[in-house]
Length: 381
Image 1 (tube, rainbow, N blue to C red):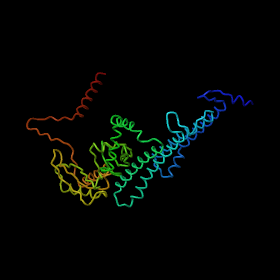
Image 2 (image 1 turned 90 degrees about the vertical axis):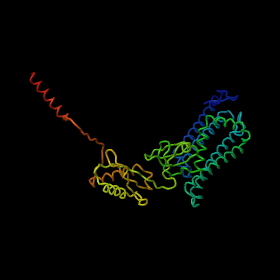
Image 3 (image 1 turned 60 degrees about the vertical axis):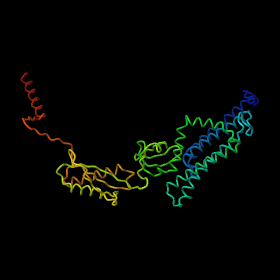
Image 4 (image 1 turned 120 degrees about the vertical axis):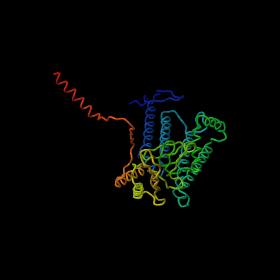
């Protein structure tokens, strides 16, 4: 086989000749890069990173950056193997950084993100765990310190990479204009997140209601807050909603919550028996607090019923208020039925002052008319 033909130039790229063997070498190196990039995004590699107690979001960022870096690394080697020299230390056209410096910059940024994540975990799980501070305050401190470490680390990495912050003054001004227009929502949510962490109107674990969404707070992030509803649906709520909208926090301060359950009974019922039945229904529920004790109020004498209201307190069922109300309603109905008390329903009384009112059964009239029509049909035959 004549290898001279394989080495004969077939293409001319950027002033360099590329042979058939060069093309084959390029394909091999590039294929290895694609395989490596896919391997770095596989579930096996994600489980390997999770052993180092790295957060899920950071793992996704790491796998993406590493896969792109691997693809770029093998692509550069493929270009060199094809016969087009591309130096690792030579500055790229239009950029003062070389390929080696860019890869080093990426590695340092990854390290900064990892250190920020580990700082948050260390402060929350170890350093502040025995400080005596409220658990939600510990989380807020850990989150703020983690953000500070991230910002300072990024500035240090960029400065050591030769990207001086003084040269970004004009860019920062342009970004400021962009924030004022297109990015104002992002900036507003970020600032709102800092306000939430500082003032702590909501904390992790609270049950809140905001903008028509009710659930338990799982995470408070820089831009948004994660809320899980009782249907196990995760809702991402922008932080500005907690600043400019009314927020109902069921567990803010005192976890005890008062529930009011109305019920109407028919006129003629023994009101004392009604009171005893409602109190029995409340006291038999294990989630009802004994202090403050349940109470019953006779609200008013309505058009069709005597209206009562059962008032109870609970500290555990604020996370499932619908279930708690339902259980009490079932118990109230059972106790009233056992006491022989009728739950009222809408009704009207008709009084005739003079004259005669003829009452006719419509169904009977219809059946009579039907039989008449049938007999007429038979006679016609």
